[in-house]
Image (cartoon, rainbow, N blue to C red):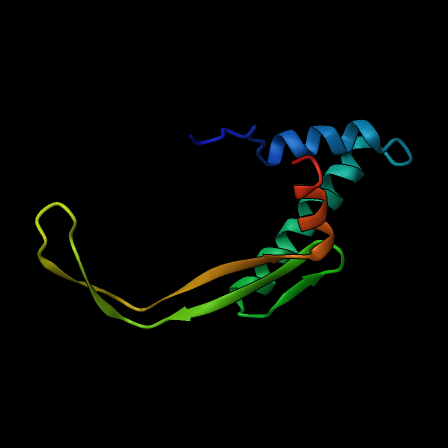
Amino acid sequence: MRIRTPKKNKSDILKTYLQSEIDLTPEINKEIFNRFFEILEKNISHHVSVELRNFGVFKSKYMKSRYGSDPRNKKKIYIPSKWKVTFKSSENINKKLNEKI
């Protein structure tokens, strides 16, 4: 049986962040929040590994071209090379994730 987990997108996280941060104006907090994601995206797109302590590591990984098979008709298809983003969560996140089990 598959367990469905709740889903939050960037705007939901931004709302939660703005409710918890009252030191600065909401416009400044929103700019800080968006700037963080811009910097993260820029570094990953330039193939720079980004480590966030006690959270995890984002890396870009090169995937070589290869041949695969179409599951509908079993024909071989060419899959071109591409870059892929990987994320490895920290031990702290893994502990928090599994402590409720």
